[in-house]
Image (cartoon, helix red, strand yellow):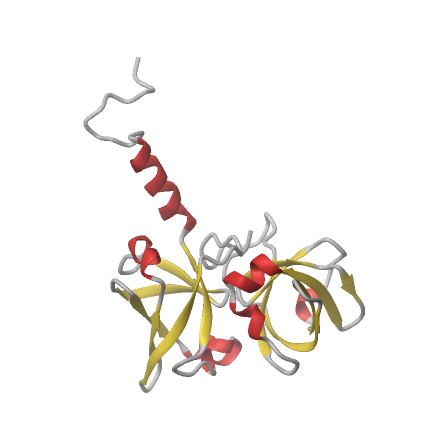
Length: 208
């Protein structure tokens, strides 16, 4: 589990194509502190497992399922990527609950700079629209953000200078693809409602 608070910008060192998979090596600093083989690190919002590490790089195997459903299929040496280690119990939950399981790939539609912040609109797969609400949470390339306006097939977010400077979102341009993860709580609520468990017209199953 993650929080959507990016710890550092890493740099893709090598991408080794393996047919139905690839080996991704990333140069980093902060996320390697205390990290051992088998630990999880989110790369642009995708949870990956550390398979190899040395003093300043780490390597993960990226399976076809991940390549099919995320933007990692397009990464290349030299690309900057958002990195976050899995959360520990003593860490502050500064963002929101993020699983590192990408729900779909969006596309940056437009950017509107302001003096102290920037409004960004992102297109999303239509099936994700039902999980977004104004002032709700959305993860974009692993960054926990607050939705300004939720639309049917897109949404807007406001990026503060800290986010612009410390994540890849400061450089994303219209047409760029981004990984999206909706709030998992919304998905659980949807399933409970569909099952009738939360039907307010029915007597609680826990009533005696």
